[in-house]
Image 1 (tube, rainbow, N blue to C red):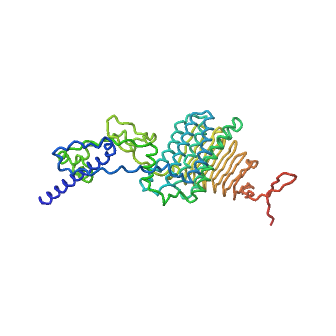
Image 2 (image 1 turned 60 degrees about the vertical axis):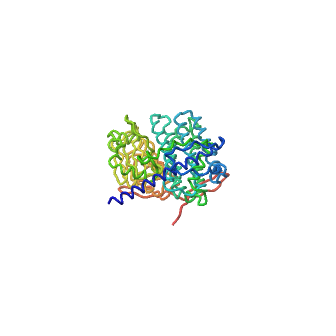
Image 3 (image 1 turned 90 degrees about the vertical axis):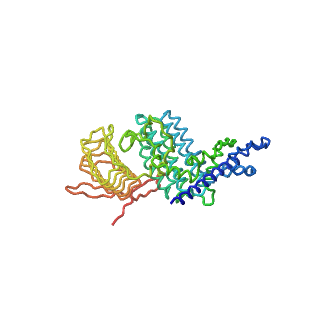
Length: 509
């Protein structure tokens, strides 16, 4: 058994010597550009101990500079993005945000501008390059997700700013719109984000319509940004983002972009002094290549000596406070700084099922993401409102008299209400059922297909308004039973005496 071990040892020694010689030759070639102008005088003779090292080859001529990507023509899709989104929508929105006079709104508007600048860089890479490997692609998408999360964190940090929090929530709801780059249907995806933002947009408009038209203009500007982004995605990426199959490799694009961003590169640093051959033989771990890898593996138990024991206070699965803050406090002990882990590639808007929520915040009951559950609001008060969002196959029972009930983006959800002071609002909630047992002066239904409203004798005077709806039925009590009356969907408009007169189309028979 000794002979094979000796043979392997000799082979490993030869490989190490070849690697050391190759490394030195590369260092000499890399520095020829800076050494050649100094008269070309020969350097000092190598010591006798290095006589076994092969002599360096003659210096090759310096390579021509790599072409810079900025010198190439900007792709048409990126030019359109600059004109339609950056110049046409982002800059006017940021300007209006600064004019509102709120530091928190200005901060989030700046993050939105940074977010769309990152999206532009992503689109430039997609239009110029072949599709990169999975690791590089995850890095690119991770940058977009970080920008989305930055907007959400900034909004949460200003939660105490009650005057502007609706504005901040509106911005944060629209921030995930840039996630369309990972979906094969960008148009419907952005449309869903717009619907989430419209709820808060309407609240800002309702509050400031009479006070300050500047706020209404600001809301319209942000809505225009999302509309223009949807139009751009439909026009250039109808079936999703496509990489340039005839483009340059992504690594080449990344190198050229880095060189352009950093300016002309300076002279390379001087090479480190070559290690003595004997020392290299004694410490094979200092070399590179496969020998170093096997040397590290053969250290045995010494491999784990560089690892630090993680304290329980730094373990997120044992410390819920760390999961809430998303930040692990720095340790007092020193440890080598490693690379940051790559974050998940999907934007937060594309995340999976969200946890259910049922809580009272101030005077607002928040019922969110309930699925196949029955939730009861007991002893509702006249100054409280109930907001129902993102529920599915849920039953909500509201006891007592509350100020208002809002149902948004919920499907197949049933709501039983005693009485409301102002209104019941239903938006983008298909196959809903609402029953009023007391009084409700107004019921508003918007953008909803298929729904049933059961009135009580005390709520027969309710005003029911519908917009962009279909298959809505109102059940009116008649004794112990209900009589179903469909809401008209077909209208007829004619011009009479210079005015447009609209009437309901009735079918006889």
